Length: 174
Image 1: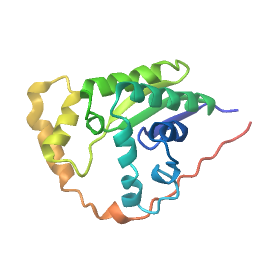
Image 2: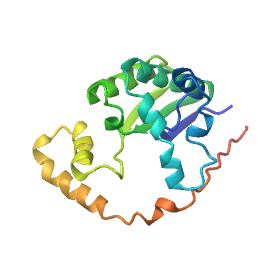
Image 3: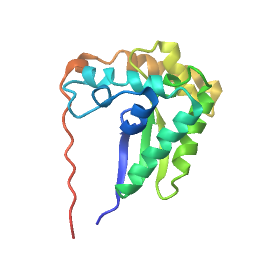
Image 4: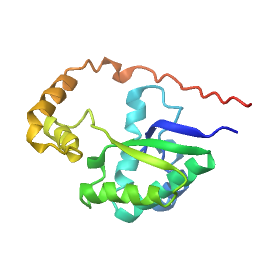
């Protein structure tokens, strides 16, 4: 068998469905991100439930832990997990969101992880700038980041309603 790495894993789209069902008390299968979603717009609509569920520190830790356990089962040894930290800070600080995710992932030391902070297209310029500044050592260089964010805002969003290209994973057996 071959060990694997995940370089583009969305935390919000990888939540444990059984745990989500337990939290809300109903079947959430059709409310979660799926390969059945036909366009990016449909896919992004499914982030509503994870955003609502992941606003409690202990829930964030548990979802992150379950994700790491699933990755371990799938022989993943390294994963880059992307998420928008300000999507989950309704009841706790952004720092607690990030700490909770790191805590849950660290409970499975066989899977090494790094976090990638994402911006949201429905966020304002200032909200997205806040995300960029979360992990920035040089707070004095904010103007440079404002320029980058301004150019990102001008990117054509016509891809929003385009179909999602399915990913095909190949595994070679030796």
